[in-house]
Image 1 (tube, rainbow, N blue to C red):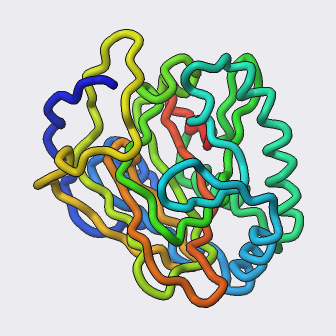
Image 2 (cartoon, one colour; image 1 turned 90 degrees about the vertical axis):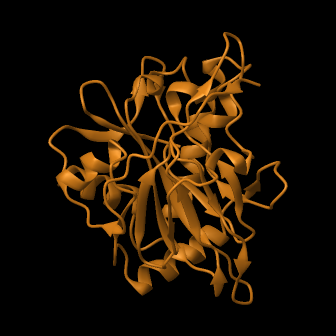
Length: 268
């Protein structure tokens, strides 16, 4: 694994959650604020529709200690030791599976989110693509047991892909179902900057808590109906919690990267 150098100093200039507008989106991409929330992104009826459709979909599970269910495709799984062709060949089937879920919903969260971003951003917003084709965007997750401390930063995670050219990376999640207790996300303002030797694979999941010790942090609750957006270069983790009987923490989301020409590209 790559060695870790001293974490850059904190960069947030204000505390709390912010509304979605052009300036705040730029500040979040530059890691100057911690969290943007879009309250009431979906109605209670739309949330119920999405939850029912997601539960009936082809749920798979990540091979990590805590049980994390998902529907879709993570580019993360193809970033090392596999040709790019494998990822782009897998995209159509993943998209069909997501489209099948969405077809049973009363709205399309991906399309609505892209429209909300485009309404405040002066450059094009859309799903990432490169010569080999479109990326996949929109993973549905079931995370009632929590997610370990990790980072997402394409220039180090995926340097051989077009998304490796970004200069800012966000993660957004629409929450359709929340836990009865627990389930908070903690974002640590300690931007990930490991020292990576040529050929090394930087460890980005299951990070040592010492990396974020003493750093400022923001904690947000997943509230059904809302979208929350944060800068994923900051180490972040999700606490486990207690669900209502038969329930979980159900969401759909993706990454948003700012390309050199300032277009915003989405992928998962």
